Image (tube, rainbow, N blue to C red):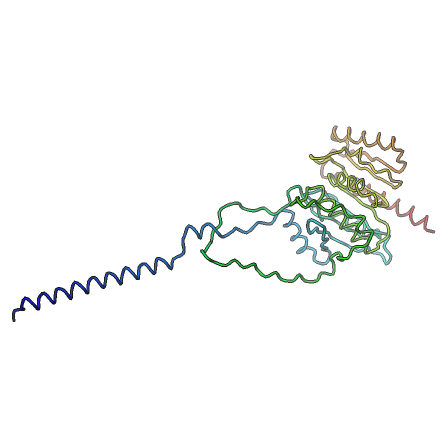
Length: 338
């Protein structure tokens, strides 16, 4: 049956309206889907990459995992310092030997520190071995553009968990002695401390820790560049007066402001200075220290120049010499106490 002209026109009109309506709906749906998608460029610009721990922080974590019973956290003004403590194998310890490895070395370093910290405990002394911060010990951060950002997103600070109580931490209350041992605070416009300030705060925290424990006599043994930092710390902190000082192959750091000879303290205490004669520069610096000690009339300063061409035997030699000196020292102390 043929379709009339009016019906055909109506049919075509309805078909056209239907097609237009379908296209509008499809375009609207597509627009909504597009608006729901986050801006990929904005996403790439916001997420901050997490900072990586420094070598110093990695060693702290390693010490805590390896020696959980010996590990001690010393809270200083600028950073959380680490130390390893071993009690003396004696009912009444003679005192404490504070061992200070060079920056970059571990509190259990195989170059003399590990052996000495265990040796002195068998001789009746507590041992506290430090971990000094390095020149650039701040956490390494990967620089780059952020990864995530959603527009109009509200930034919320993560909740900070309350720290667990740690019986090994230094008490927060500070006595007059602790305040005297602590270096002056940083200026408000300083955001980070220099290495000498970081080291000084770490040394002060260790001295205050031992002061709180009231462990009697204090012998400080410092190795390599740590010998320099120790002498400068004593010079800048007159209230610190150990009972004896042992310098193990002392060296000056690259940024040293003074020579080791200039930093020799004018204290009436034994100062043992051990180094090897295989290096002409070290021999010259040792001669300067000896001359300075004579000018200052340091009667208890003793320099021991060791000779051992074989590197592997040097540590054993220096440990044997220190053991002999410590035995003589404690014999003298015990005889005076009688």
